[in-house]
Image (cartoon, rainbow, N blue to C red; front, side, top):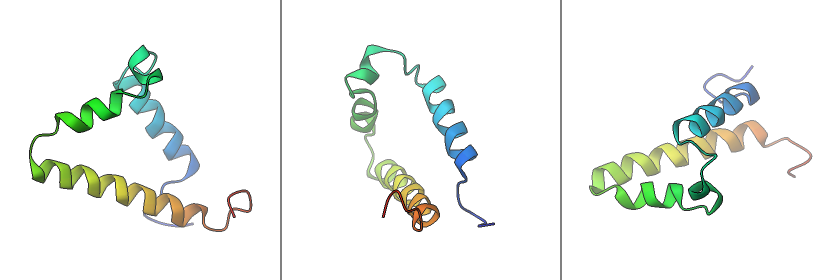
Length: 73
């Protein structure tokens, strides 16, 4: 067991939460503008740095979990 990393179930639950939160059935998601619009609305540098650090942190954990996956290698 790897502590501090997202397991498959947690990632799926997180994605479902995001879909529900952002009402991802809307056309704005299909056009890929939803997250770009949210990104552009962040006005303060501190907010941007927090958001960027969360994104980077998530991907680093994801890559750590998937590093030995043969389908990705």
